Length: 304
Image (tube, rainbow, N blue to C red; front, side, top):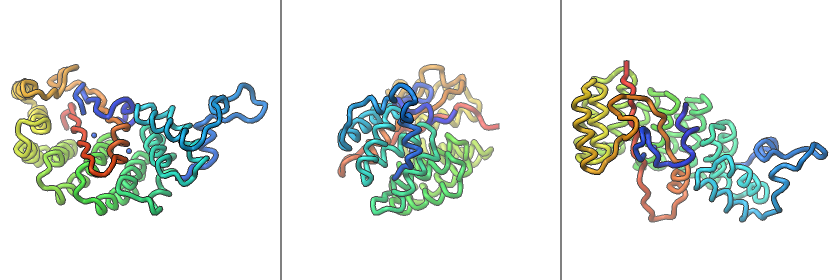
């Protein structure tokens, strides 16, 4: 199951319980989401039962629901805000996030593609569109949109991190490796990207090439969440459960909860999750704010 579909409640929720890292809508789409009924078809739909509201009210309601992770509930309000104010970038952006987070990739493309070609275009829009293309199986278009995002903001680690997570969700490890490699060209001292690079190499059956990358991640961020995570992941790939357990205990003593249930040393798979609400806050935050990148997800399964 893709992490996107299980990631609507909290962007910092965990894989394996660790605190953790995606416009103009046709009337048909609005009717589908809002469940507008034809005259005489029976009871009024929820959208018809609501009292009339202006664009600002609908946008505030939709934004609040998005922030709380209630993405499906937010969609009718954001569609209403768009109908009342077709030029609203905020409504379109949040609607793209909601469609992406609920796995409605074609709808996400429909609302994000116009932003991609508008004066309001930003690297965040391009990155979301890239993830929507990836979810829709359009790998070439996804990589192209991502490349544009990275070219516009080459030193933004989060752009690479979110796209790497999307590649993991959709099991496109070759693209994930490309994304991590591009990121390391710009940010060679990023422990997070060295970790992602190592994981993608391992998932592609190239663990020996990935081992130095795990080591580099641990060296760049010693005694940190990512440093311990890199050590544990490397040990699990090497099937060294004793050392993985020892590193895990050190991480816990240092205040980093890599896992709790089930124990990571069992390598029991558990879907990872990220919070789209946090994604929204990061990409629509005020200038000068400094949101942090969500920690990477641990891949319990060993490559074969």
